[in-house]
Length: 168
Image (tube, rainbow, N blue to C red):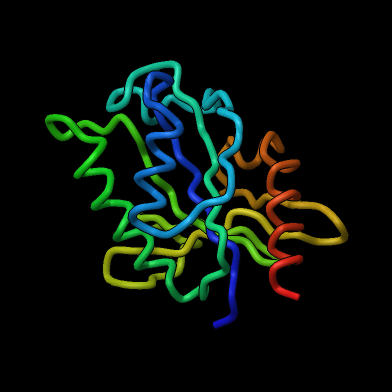
């Protein structure tokens, strides 16, 4: 499988330091580009019972391109990082969603099965959340509300340009 641009779409409590998350991710997965601003994560309250209210999502991008077939390994690694660094009494303060993009799509890793998800291992799935067609990102019916909203499209365009430059 070809090289892709990996990123981590991280949901976290506001009091969790973005530089701390960046350091831990870099130690576990390799050097990172700069991280994004923290976007309000208010399209759903799915994580509120575990993580509390007033969450935000920040994106962290790997510096080097990596094979798309590493997605399951990245997800297994983020589960371990969540447990080791960001969990107290079984509740997380950070949710690490690894994903990647290439010229034509955005894919996230998931531990939850679904009709549109592709099994990578017995417990890890690939979730196609956006495609890139005629110069724009397009969501699907199943795309997560925050990704569907378009809020991240300018950032994803920037990451896509970064990917295209690196893949030349």
